[in-house]
Length: 356
Image 1: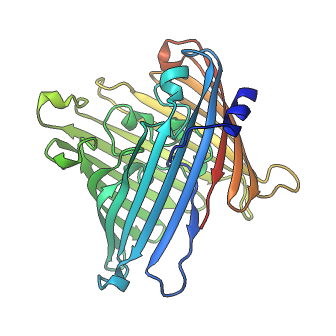
Image 2: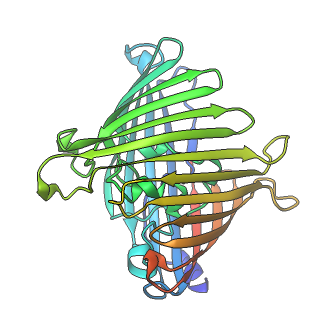
Image 3: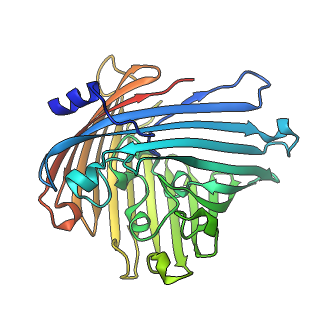
């Protein structure tokens, strides 16, 4: 970890932050048609032993987002246009040090700048909302609300569809459309996306990914969802085989009051034996303000299991230094990365900065 601290103080890599990274919400002045967000996350990931090879590398993620009020632009009232610019740059810790398939950090990605999101949305009637454009599916489907502090990729996009498809997830969104229905405590969401988001010019010509999710929001949040991946087009596209799967998740407060400790559980299953992952399981707890006098800090412990890589555990603590500044030490133990390598102990130190 000393190497991690030294590297963070020195020339750490600059990368855009991952889906789990928080962004400072900038409230526009009254009457302004634009709101904006900015986030920067920079980290050092140190493999202390096991995996491919010991050593540390850096990652960083930067995002700049804008939301335009469509009504102020003469479009239907309640409509929105969202655009997010993203820069990723990474030392590839999982690919070069650990060897795990799901990634020990949720901001590992090829170094690149791109439009991450660019979509138009508007309400239809009292209960529906429609969106179309460049959409990140993992920001809307199969989301574990209380797992966002954990850095391992297993707690973001679920391994059964991130490992078995070319999904429109971080770092690559895809062209698609969504319809969301809100009725009381129930939400139903349907989405269709291109099967090959790496080639945005293909649109739906190479097939499609379909997702459906129902959620109930009461004392906790309970979700049941399914996905279907149907690629098409020339063999040289080298897309994964057609597949489908289902998942079930729960986010549940453990006691009453404001900002209580919470627990989460998620399980996914894909019955066809054509993908890298046949099942996965994630569970954990999130404890706000675990220490006296540190009400803004958070502690989280999680465990994840996927068929191709066995069991892994993660412990992380986020220290809030200022309203828009946080430091997060993280420790992971990965049992047999990729199913074959020696078990790895990985320490990460992440710095988050967000401003208006």
